[in-house]
Length: 222
Image 1 (tube, rainbow, N blue to C red):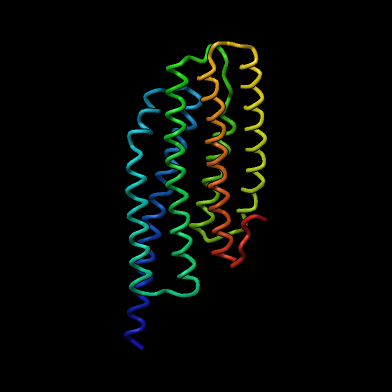
Image 2: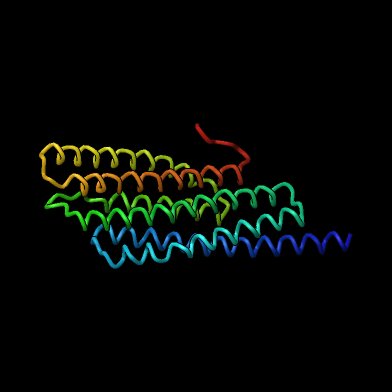
């Protein structure tokens, strides 16, 4: 029995270390999204370059967390809530890495728009970007607290993101119809909304994993 208690203490100590690494990754991703919000509002090319240049930080942390999760699974064979937590971390870890990639994609789109020139036309993506950032913060906070109560709000926010994406599409199409000569910049302008929408989708995926972790219910595709 003492040996079993020692194994459990070791397992929970390693899980606590995993949680800390995961929280650090979440904070890093939130930082990137905060910078995306500023970049989209100010069209700051230096900030765009910084987001692209620091992408490896997120990639390296994602790999390290996955490797550590697999080690815990192999060495301790956790069960019940411990197993669900580690599986959730592995899945959400991948989602966060994708969010980092999308932040880079947004930064590259901004660079193309600046290079090609968009004329006087613009789309105000600030509300959409801030909403996406809020969804991501909400989903990660729910995970850290292991509290699924707030996650349903994320799905409502996601519907509003889709509406904002559709509004951006109509605005860009109208501008293309005007034959402004800035087609490449305009298409990249629209693609910004696609990347933001997909970040919102990642926040929904995280929320689904939190619900499963806390309540044991699979809510995908509902």
